[in-house]
Amino acid sequence: MENQQITVTSPLLPDLQDFIPYLEDIWKRKWLTNNGHYHQELEKALSEYLKVPHISLFTNGTLPLITALQALRITGEVITAPYSFVATTHSLWWNGIKPVFVDIDGETCNINPEKIEAAITPKTAAIMPVHCYGQPCDVLKIKEIADKYGLKVIYDAAHAFGVESGGKSILEYGDMSTLSFHVTKVYNTVEGGALVCRDAETKRRIDYLKNFGFAGETTVVAPGINGKLDEIRAAYGLLALKKVDEAIASRKRAADLYREGLKNVEGIKYLNNMENVRHNYSYFPVFVNEKEYGMSRDALYFKMQKKNIFGRRYFYPLISAFSTYRGLDSASLENLPVATKVAESVICLPMYAWLEKNNVERIVNIIVTKGNLE
Image (cartoon, rainbow, N blue to C red; front, side, top):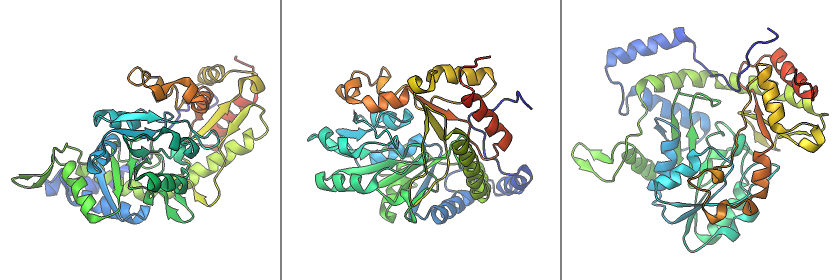
């Protein structure tokens, strides 16, 4: 249909008929949450698929960030980037930690390692980079800096499910990595998330923290929270995992079509695949240079909406522009010129597993025929 609505994302759903036997089994077991059968099965399956030693499931993607900071006993200041979803920085605020923003690299949209050292103070305890759009950060440079100054590294890998660099899971880097399994992600459990760590002892502490701190029926070892994933979503996740490779392959086809269709459009820039990286094609952001393109980002954004195509200005505005954080010295525009420019030029185009070729072509055609708002 020529005027069919195209949303920025659409969920990867297991087949309903396949889900019913799992639900029947859950009803039979009468064990709905608290480290049940399917919860345990999903942790094993994800650990194998993602090539990580230890993974702990959570009920959403924000709680792993909050818990990682607790598990590593982080206090003081944490260096992070303002170009992310607000949960990244909110997790610091909820732990009483001061976020220190540094600028991003305009080619990757990730934290710029060259800006990190200048932001380190005696109060700095950790670095929290984001693998933005699933593009791997410069993990080796960040490790070098962290080792030099004795800092912990927690990666917000919400976008980076299944991403590998040089054949190694990107989740293996840093002290911990967090994932989001929100319905908008490449892989989802409707709502959900996970925390990846390096050793069994740390996982045990994480599992205590996400279950009120209980280490036994009458023993509480820490002021934990309730972050557990229930059996229904764990079962859903097991089924979704069977479809994720097909979904990523389909997303790649859509990304290839976008790149081919937009490669000669002056004033439109997009991210290219990185060398030796297995991408998951979680997003397809384009960046509008108003002077070269002849139309502002917002004009194009609303033009697309008039054509029933709903992209997203993701991430806009910067986290540092929100009232909670804009009073910080590191939130100044002078400190964040690249992030500011990127945030003011970005549109994430529709991207999901079953985005049809004709709809990609329809989106590309609207961008190519710039200036026509009718």
